[in-house]
Image 1 (cartoon, rainbow, N blue to C red):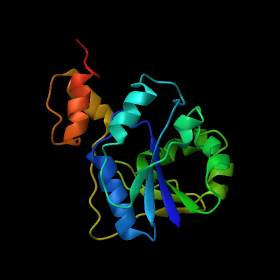
Image 2 (image 1 turned 90 degrees about the horizontal axis):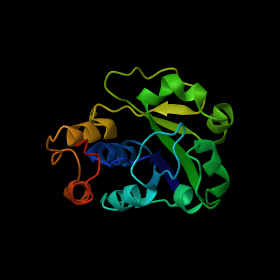
Image 3 (image 1 turned 30 degrees about the vertical axis):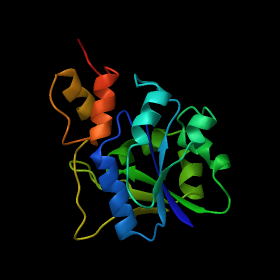
Length: 186
């Protein structure tokens, strides 16, 4: 089976993650997308706990997707290259990144090993060029592709400012954030 990994902090997960997963399934030969919430952050930054982020990620509901526990179960540090030994050998994997990650990919730990070991699917992000591209990278491109600039950072900032997030995250994620008082600045 061809699996595309969509990794990140999912701090919080939002409809942009669903947009990306749906369109990777629609416009590539991917059989499944696995959401891969990280355990640690590299570089470290304030995030909800791994348990909180996992609970929110579990409500992402889309056919042909699932949650991968590779990083959390193995308490990995958030460096993408460290997932490689844990990937099940019976599948073929690719890794999804947004074009916003391309300018700093060279700062990732062992990035050259990573891009020669696993193909990358690059999802266009508004305001970010699809470059630099390295060997083994493919930009997802289709006339029906729908992009967005929704980000977890903007969701957290909206919560901190007391603005609604209902249209940007699944209902259960908004309820979880509210009931656990996540991202509030006051």
